[in-house]
Length: 342
Ligand SMILES: Cc1cc2nc3c(=O)[nH]c(=O)nc-3n(C[C@H](O)[C@H](O)[C@H](O)COP(=O)(O)O)c2cc1C
Image (cartoon, rainbow, N blue to C red):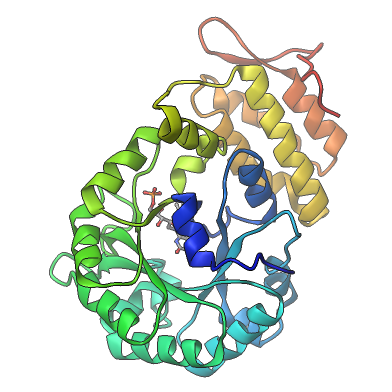
């Protein structure tokens, strides 16, 4: 895998928005799809260093990429310095141009092993990991943090200063505490304080669901770039919409139902090409629900979702999807053909 010669952090800043690392979501097919719809920088899913250290085939497969999937950052999650360093070197050898350390994941099984947002409770360990990564890698090391562990322990400024002192090239702040997981509104004020406290670039994360949110978060935080996470669920063309809005201020270009179907088929085709072909239907189930979330009768329709891994059958299912004038989904036997595709 060859990345461009540009500094990836500079590329992120130039891109203004990037696809966030999301476990179970930002696999190669979703990244390629997002790129087709405007995304200019993306991250892998969080990858556990244990899986790389012990050569777990499923984990190693998660590192796969293709030349069109650039520029791309890899995100690692771990606690043990030796394992993290070894996994990071493997990623660098594979050609990744940027490595992000996850110090924000709130999942119980992650924090119980001292990884993810648990590192916010142990800034000494966080600093040690960053120092060692920076020492052995020639690619930039960035760090993803939350605003803190809980409302009594909001320490993102301290964590960011630690990261900067140990040589991190940038920091991304998800401005919620571990305690609230993904609930409620992020407090972007904390990202602003981080931005005012360090010299390295700062990226903001939290509640980017529409183009307008991007300008608001730039204004609130003064950050250098913004990550798009749940906002891309069932809406990978959010990147096109954001850039259109940032360029000429236009909003509200909803895709027609046929265009959404076309994107779904594109997504399936990437998935059949790049992911495990025997696992496409469970992998795509949630995505199909997200694409169709704004329509009625979704549960009934999903009962008909093919439990098979056959591309033709999946295409037939999507082509047969219709909506009536009351926004209700139904399946037509004749199908509505997505013209121009396949
Ligand atoms: C399903 C899901 C998986 C996620 N996985 C990761 C991950 O692997 N690494 C990471 O740093 N953040 C992960 N996140 C957090 C997002 O990157 C982002 O910081 C968070 O969702 C806040 O942004 P939002 O409010 O715009 O969704 C995940 C979020 C979701 C919803």
